[in-house]
Length: 388
Image 1: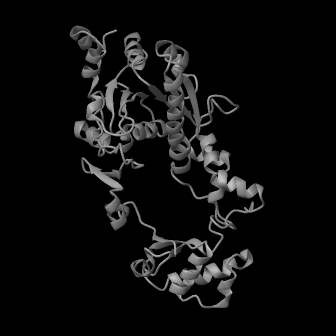
Image 2: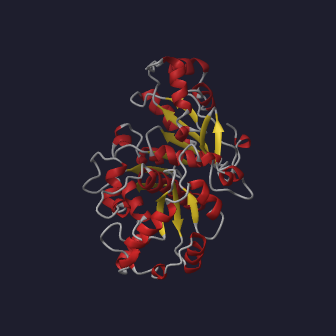
Image 3: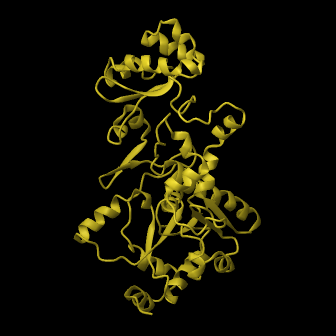
């Protein structure tokens, strides 16, 4: 895709992404959303169970893969590696999410790639990082967030931690950290011509996301016992509550003026609610406030509180959120090929991103990319046929 056809602040960049799972694709999606040309090196496709239509539908629903060009390469073959290196030689950024040492074993480690492209930003994201005692151990989001301390902060008193599926670890602490890291390194490379390796570890990023809580803890403002703090479900004025219809609302009336408005609108005249910051009173005040919210439906509470300075919002499910008037007005969600998905963010005033682009089938751009790299027609046919 020519740069003139792309929109967004990163339309001048070319990124080579090695197909993987979770955080690296999320970083690739963020870069592609903002206009970067992201060329994804996929594995040669295997026959899919359920036939071609099932495979195509599954691919289209892989939102993290949107906006890419795709070339399929067998990186265990010399010819496949050479194509990858030619793509890298023309790229500004490389991103990969394999275990430490995998890219080196393929002959595609930082040393070889930086020889081909000295200004290359080589972005790597793993769970534990490129070094350390756990670097070679398998793990998943739950493990990285657990070791960082962030998972403990989602616990309720006397209950196990609440899992946040990929949000704090893979995507916030991993993919978003990688995207930030490569753009920071790219700013340096564009000024100096010097490329470098970005080591983004999900465990590190999860700890970084918990910076505020760590600061509070060090100052004695956050209890070690989970679920007893303002912000983790301990306080009655910062909590989710069930309504009469079984749906939930969220309240974050922390500041005194917001808390006063909550009391006014909800009829909380009892002087007991004066003790907003007396943590010893929080359990009984929470129980009383829970009774109040159970007296009406979520729609009733929205009619009374939404849009006010109470700091209120309904807890919407994944089907409801895209239809909310605020999200519709902001175009927070988009629909592409029948798949509802979050739209690119953040917004830029001078270089707005294009609308969401569809997910390309695996290897859809192989022929065009090989031709762009200067391969002759006969060589392209051999490569596509899998010849050694």
